[in-house]
Image 1: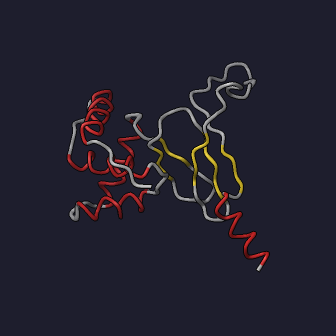
Image 2: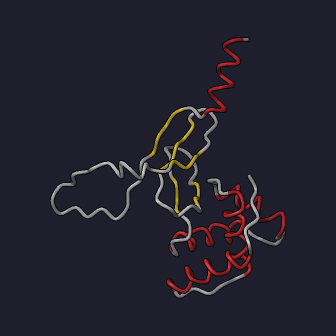
Length: 153
């Protein structure tokens, strides 16, 4: 789902993130970040490159990789890694988890239940958790419906 993201919003968030790391604002960083925010999905670097290149033909793959790394370091985007799959990038920085459809390889945001909170985890003494993510694997509703239709055909 494509959404209009106001350029002022992109600029403000990007400038704040870059300022935290002492990096400067560039047109390429703005363009790539806006492409991540537009769909709100979890694209790979290749997918980001294809989206961004359509409006900025001189953009290189190296610039996309470097910008994605910068956005991660600035805390504007996070990496989502799955076994054997390409790294994907998530622009939703609210507390959430991910569901990976093993049929279509789609990645979907799962919001934690505010009533029950996060699961209680007991770490061994001396360990300091900086971040954790819960990843659910299964079949999304669209793929489940396709499988059911094929089974009934």
